[in-house]
Amino acid sequence: MPQGRVETLWIESEALASNLLGDPTRRRVDVYVPAEETGSGLPLLVDLVGFTSGGPAHTNWKAYGENVPERLDRLIGMGAMPPGVVAFPDCYTRLGGNQYIDSSAVGRWETFLVSEMLPHLEAQFGCGGPGRRGVFGKSSGGFGALVHALRHGGTVWNAAACHSGDMGFELLYRADFCNGLRTLDEHDLSIENFIRKFEEGPKPKDNDWHTILLLAQAATFDPDPESYLGIRLPVDLRTCELIPNRWENWLRWDPLQLVQDPACLDRLKSLRALFVDCGTKDQYNLVYGARRLHAILEREGVPHIYEEFPDNHSSTDYRMDRSLPILATALTNT
Image 1 (cartoon, rainbow, N blue to C red):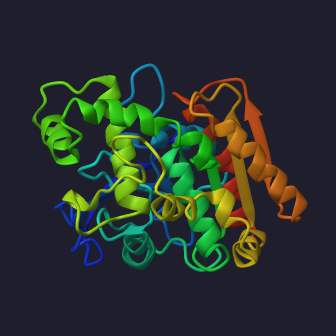
Image 2 (tube, rainbow, N blue to C red):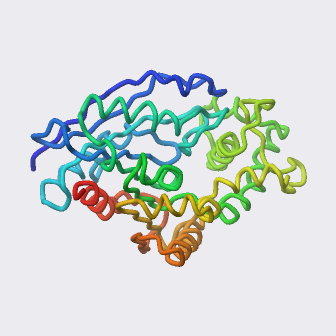
């Protein structure tokens, strides 16, 4: 099977310079170029990874399976998809991950991807450009891909795939606030104490990981510059009662809310391909949000492919065998 190559680039970002987490502004981007290609004239796909991961994790060696470049070699080599350049940006943060939108606390990641990374890659490899860009991801990355399509479909992005993406925040996050507060209670209900202990190690507990995820989302969806690292939960820390205006700041980023906006619907309609899937056994209740999204898209006449599969949220990279050929084909047949 012909093997493509992976090149590593570094981008110094101005958009990330003011993040409150103190994260580095020099970011790594791995770039896959198919065998016997320079990248010139090929479509560009951008891979947004899930929480607790970074783009280079998808180009690294993988036990008992394929990494994404190996998957691409196979799909392209067997004629299942046309060749394309694929970028794997490292968007990892101090809080364990990214939702790929602009935040005064976590950083202006949407701006980094759209205004800094894309021009840099396209200038160097001659790939992508208007009408030939796609974005895909799973979990938090699926959320990022879908939200980017809702906000930039038809202009920046022309195809998108959302695998088990975050949506339906009432079902996804609201019930977890109680669990998060029980963890914070072990640290005097102090977010600062919890994060410092989390970072000191030596080994975070399972509940700690769920709590850091909640704090990361708070810093992303509702940053509070007056709080430690910009983090303020949308609940009373003693009673777990929702603080309506803070919770509303979260909900306005829920794809099920964004898709109600006629302008966002028009952007989705302008895509050449939109793929959404979710496992029927998803342990984070995401299948229910996905079904609601599918119903809205059908009702509003948004062309898309929606699929469910008999699995949970974990280790579902094999679903790229469905989405990547769809995106690459749509971006090639322009």
